[in-house]
Length: 279
Image (tube, rainbow, N blue to C red; front, top):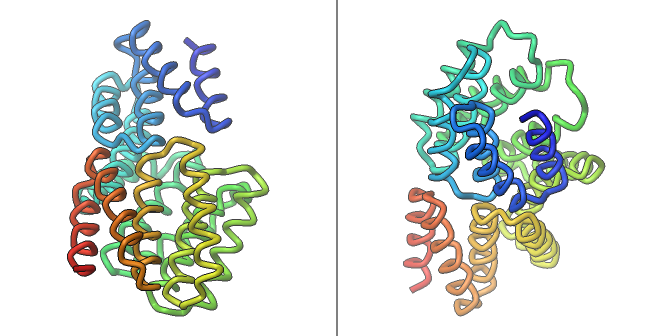
């Protein structure tokens, strides 16, 4: 079992998520009552944007949890799935359950992730003060530099929302620098896409298309359909902004279909609204 899990995480770190799914399925078949088998499969499904399959795997992992620490990690992952689906109420519910279990844990990395994740939810529901409070808690922990890419990215999103684009760009670029340094492809792609979207708002179209296309390319390379859906959404908005309705519609339709297939209904509905605005 340990050798299989080690091989699984080697695939994750290498960005080979398709092989990781195969290894996760193999682990479940060999160890049908193992929390680790279902947890690994859930992680692989989440990283490829297959949200419903990921949620199902984590719910099965919950049934076989062997410790409170296992449950805390599982609840954090379930919270992330609901966050991706746009169900922020359930996301907060599970993040809080995880935090109640792990608040006194020595696992600084998990606490960091939970604070960061709760900040993301509060930012998305418009409570930027609460979001910054959790981001500051996360950044105040003594943790390896590579983890801070996520917090810098999320702080940038707050400044982006407040239209303080100078500060947003500063933090997006700090995040990109760390992600490139440690080859964190997922976070790199997400940050590039959000920076490209920001440059679209600023009408700096040359920089916008550069970051959007680079972000899409990385999402395609790692096989993340959910991430690709965001890339297509932002490209759709980009082409709508430069009045190319044909390409805007093409990319928004691609985004809608991928969000639907990933089980991200709230995001799919948002893309439909953008399509209606084109007419």
